[in-house]
Length: 223
Image 1 (cartoon, rainbow, N blue to C red):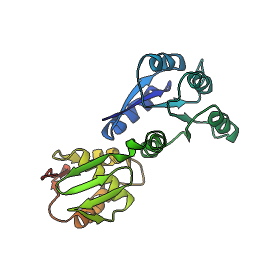
Image 2: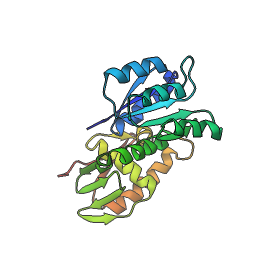
Image 3: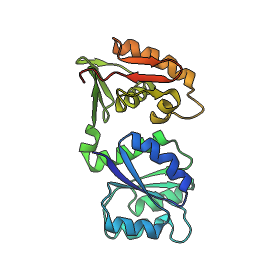
């Protein structure tokens, strides 16, 4: 079951950047362009978490949070360009559950979002993906291959999860980086090939196949 998140932020480009990645990772993201619109949406629809910009024209994020906390305990993750400690303290004292400064990576945002939800709703961390004899437990980042524990690096785990979420379908190298939350300057498409090679050895068999000139596909197998 997808997590329903509401982004309250006047930056439409941020919504476009986040929605694809979060959608591939089990988070259905909706958008409200300002504080008043966000409060209206939350009054009429059910969401699991709010991503709230601290600096918006008109009603700012702190005022939105103040009004929201008067009627709801929904988890709120503050997003802001402000780096001042006083602003962070005010947000947390008003009831924010976490605070992340812009710019941030999609991967870090997802990790913080899941951490907040695990604290509020422990069942969120129990997501399980499986295919072809491989099981990945998202909350604990554990992997089992044919019932045996496998030790993966952080990037290997992220790549595996991205492949498992689209098991049976071809994933390009660029899409794989994006879905694994590593579409940045640190990890290149060439690096993906190296880590996929290492991942293959740890998983054994022929679970990850190369589609020459395109990318990779994780075989469905028996799951």
